[in-house]
Amino acid sequence: KRGVWARRTEDGEREILRPEQSSWHTMYVDNDLVEEEDLLAAKFRTRFRLPYDNFKELVEECKKSPFFRRWHGTDAAKKPSSPIELLVLGALRYLGRGWTFDDLEESTAISRDVHRVFFHAFIDFGSTTLYDRYVIAPTTAEESKRHMKEFEKAGFHGCPGSSDCTHITTERCQYNLKNNHLGGKSSQTTRTFNLTSNHRH
Image 1 (cartoon, rainbow, N blue to C red):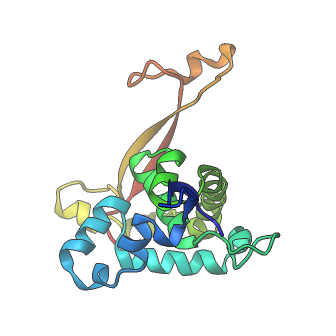
Image 2: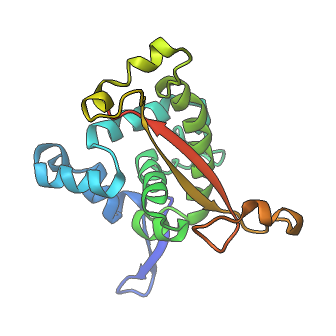
């Protein structure tokens, strides 16, 4: 069975902590109260950056996607795959709060290497399947006007959205490219990614 070494029994034997016994599985996967109690739902949204219903929808999407085929059922050795619910939670926490894969192993009893491999698949899935479905870039002035209503009410006429950027540190940047990757916010070399969005859910 999958899991991480957790403790010794009274007989001195090693006892494996399985993902289904982890704190996250107890709190977020096998817990109907997250859907029934507003306080728990609010905590989930704060911790993982999306509502619980959307998390469940995302899990179902991942279960159907070929990007995650290796986590559908059993692996090549016929062992049950790691619960995809916990892997999705791990990817969301990594993105939302900057946890390490080792932190995720501690909370899910799934090895950090499994989380790392899943995360790369999750990014590929998000940048293709989810991007194509949910990200819409206006291509005409008429399409842009559809996104201006809220901004016009606030006095920002002609504004289709608000923009922000995030700086991702690039380690091992080539020396001859260093100056091109330095900015005002950090002494480290970074790549900047910009996003413009409206304020509609």
